[in-house]
Image (tube, rainbow, N blue to C red):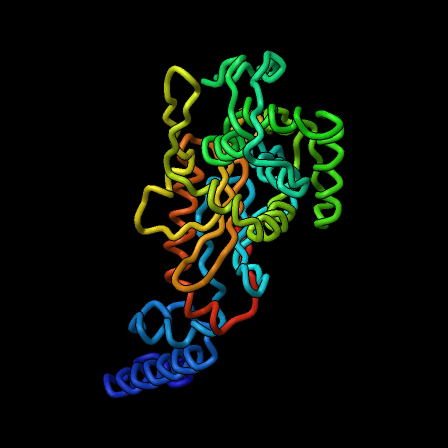
Length: 321
């Protein structure tokens, strides 16, 4: 530029010299920017493999897209949080309630072979949910517990609570007392079925419950039965587990419970083994009939991809928190 200002008629040699100087300065500037990482174009034009190697140490795990309002995934062995989304937000929990119902029943050590009669008191008058257990039918406590867990049978759960010493009110006190003992500080139970939207908890609290429930072999076994036949006198009733993932051979599920009411959305809690790691998954308030199952599949795929990083890192992944 100085050369051109001092001579209004620049020679071709001078112009060529200026262009060479400008080009050299430009290349030097790009090289400096690339070295410091401040030039966004440098990453764009580098080979993808080199960019990945350079950035892998500082990039957080890619969030997994979930339709559930709350989600929590923890390592069942170490209690390490692997993924969290609104994990401490209080929400209705629908039939995930029945996990605590089963715990209270078993803690009382009532005989599983004792016959219990379904009555009109067990009919749902809040949601008017359907049931094939009609008043007058008699089933053992063990059968009712299995139906409550694997098929989310509301009349079965209510009948179990009704036959608890002291009746329904004593049963509800026992449920809430057990929740406090487990450290479920944001949980309350109003009814033993989960039909009431006032049955509330958080994904965090329910993970505590899932860890405790995993020590009950009967709950693990009943909750993962795929199908069951129940003799009710003149005929047999066929029941199927409400967790569709149990019918997928790609899953190794050790404990499971689903739930749904309109206020709670679709809910799912399970213990499973994924890629050699025992995990607890809690999903609440998923909208869409199969959205909670789709979210679980997405988490399983995400974990397969992220397992090497879990083995190295100690941080948690927060999704849309």
